[in-house]
Structure formats: structure tokens, C-alpha cells
Image (cartoon, one colour):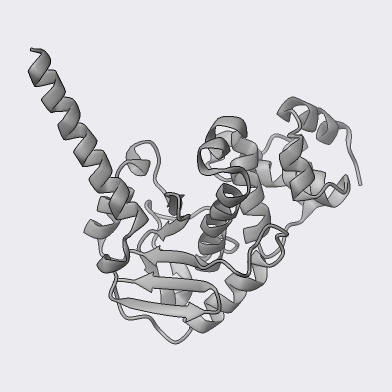
Length: 242
């Protein structure tokens, strides 16, 4: 019995290591790539000419972050074949339908099937909420910013020591082209669906981060060093007005 258990554990360990190796070194699965300074975008399908505009905009947004490292190469993998996306995203997709994810110690960003020529992802459902703001540029930037946070606080520490609102709120804050703080604050106070956790959007978390950085004047490194309690942010927003 003990021998069978050991064999089962060994088998599971080998599967995990095989998957982890795939996440850390996936470039052999992608035959096309575009490099713009320190951003490399890989694709399993030919890359259309507008990728230059897309990568320029991604870099422009990334440079808004003080933890962006111009000396590090950031890799993005767009899986257009559904089998490839399912293979790479299977563990992450067990609980949610993802637009993308970032995993591994290299901070590799993975994006679901997309129409690059139209600067959009192909959503997992029939439509994409807030599609105008959440284009392909947004998803790429959002996932790369997860990698910035891993570099800053540590990959494991990111998940253990930092709350969900921070993990996704800061990437959303950097990835969005614009954000109407007043409008979203009013929706938050009215408890509109877009501003709830249940919406599946990160607008609520974005609002937290925007409040801390744009209103209170904290830097991202100050927030990382002393993470506020979510309940305190909520109370502050409920009583705040512009």
C-alpha cells in the first residue's frame, strides 16, 4: 500500500514538474514573435502589422509604474489555438474563465485566443464586460504588471502576504487607459454591479488603488510596505466626495 502511494506521489510530482517547466519555458510552442525594446510578444499564429502599435501602447502604460524595470525582458504568449490555451491555462481555468494569467518565476504572461488585428481577445463567453476598456492592450498590460509585482514582492509572497484587492487592483490601475474616479465612486456608493466583487471585474479594486495613489498620494512602494486594511478603504470611500 505504501509503495503504491509513493508511486502515485511520484507520478503527480512528475506531472507538476512537467507543467511547471512548460510555464517557465513555453517559447517552443510559439513560432512567431515581435520584440519592442524589452517586451516580447509571442504568438502561435502569424502576427499582423498593428502589433507595433499594440506593443507601443503596452509599454506606454507599463512605464506609468515605478516598479517597471527597463532592463528586464517581459514575455507575453498569445495562444490562438484553443488546445494550446487549454493546455497552458488548465489549472488556472479550473475556477474561472480567464482573459489571461501570469505564472512562474520568470513572470511569463499568457493571453487567451485573440484577434490581434482588431486589438481584442476572444472572450470565454458570448460577450465581454467593459469591452471598450478591456482590449488586448489592457489584458497584456494587466498580466505583465502581475509580473512586476512578483519581482517586487516575491512570487510566493504575492499570494501569501497581499490581499486580492491589491493583487488585481494595481494591475488594473496601470492597464486601463483612463479611469473616471468620480463616476466609479458614485457607482461604488450605489453598490452597482460593476463595482461589486461578484461582477468579475476589478473596477472596485481599481478604485481602492486609485484612491490610495491619486487621492491620498501614496506611492506603490509605500502601499507594498504598509498594506491598508480593505475595510478601512471602504469606509474612507463611503464618506469621501469630490
